[in-house]
Every structure is written in C-alpha cells, then in structure tokens.
Image 1 (cartoon, rainbow, N blue to C red):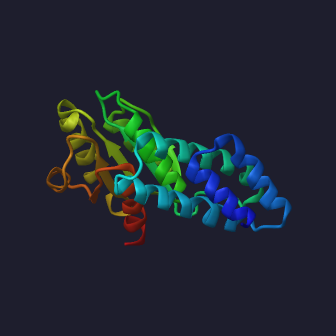
Image 2 (spheres, rainbow, N blue to C red; image 1 turned 180 degrees about the vertical axis):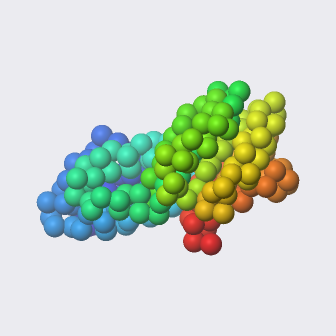
Image 3 (cartoon, rainbow, N blue to C red; image 1 turned 120 degrees about the vertical axis):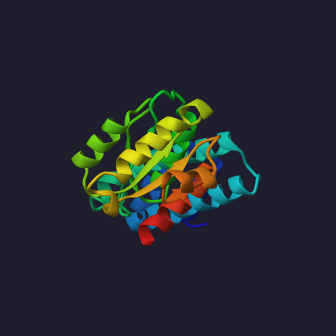
Length: 212
C-alpha cells in the first residue's frame, strides 16, 4: 500500500489524528504534494460523497472524513503552490437572513473545499447586502452558494437571489441554493443557476457550474 493510499484510507475512515503524520510520511518519501491532495484527499472525498448519496454512510461519517482531510491539508499547505488548494476558484457561502442553521452549510462548505475550491464562509443570518459586499471584496468569486433551512426564510433566499440577479456582476457568477425546504422548482422560480439536495451533490454541482 503506497503512502498516498494510506492517506486516502485514513481520510475515508475519518482518522483526523493520524492523517497529518501519514501526509508527512508521504512527503518525506518524495510524493508530489498535488498528487497527495488530488489522489489521497479530493478523490477520497468524492468516494465518501458517493457513499453518502447512496445511503451507505451518514452525515457524521461524512463530517469526520472532511475533518480528517482538513488536518491533512494543513500539513500539505506549505508544500503546495499557493492557490492549488483552491484551484477551482472562490465560492462565497452563507445561510440567509433570519436563519441560524449552520450544520448543513458547514458540511457543504467542507465538501466544496474538499473538491478544490477556496471557500469564503459568511456564516448564518446573512443579509443580501452582506453577500453583495463580499462579492465586491472578492470579484474573482465563481459561485455564490446560499442556504435556507426554514420555510419562513425562503423569502429571504428569494430576496438575496433577486439582489444578485439585479447586480452588475450577475453574468460573472453562478448562484446555487439548497436547504431542507428548497426544491429544484423553487430554485428555478427565483432565478438560481443550480440546486442540490445534499452536501455531496453540492460539490459536484459546483464543479459542473464552473466548467459550464
């Protein structure tokens, strides 16, 4: 078993305490940092995401795998050319105004980061103005991802997407939405570019949107 396979196995099992040492061992053996990132981590998180979609594992397992990957990335970061951990571009993510739920958003943020994006997390209860402000500070952002977990905050999601749709930068950015009460129909109705119903799909959707 190669050292990179070892990293992959530890990430998949969510062994956060052991991943750092395994990454270091792979580096000491001369493995390429980008290969460790892609083969040992990003690919593995893709497998974890598929297992989650198929109901073979659940949110806790996915969270521990994402945390383990984070630990591995910390060891890798100094060895990577700046930008390769966020090679696919920036994603601004937020839970909309009036909504304080962050577990789903955090999971999506971790999965999107695991897929190779740089994530700017604005937190919960975020106003439309704050989302626009964040984009202006990061005009190279590729995707804005918004979450609403309550039926009562769906109007806030609609208003935030409307504000982005009316902005002068709308053609430069993709908008994806999600959350328990959100459906594909609602996403289409409010003018979002994409919808996903779980964190693993959100990561694949983000990749599709930037490739489009």
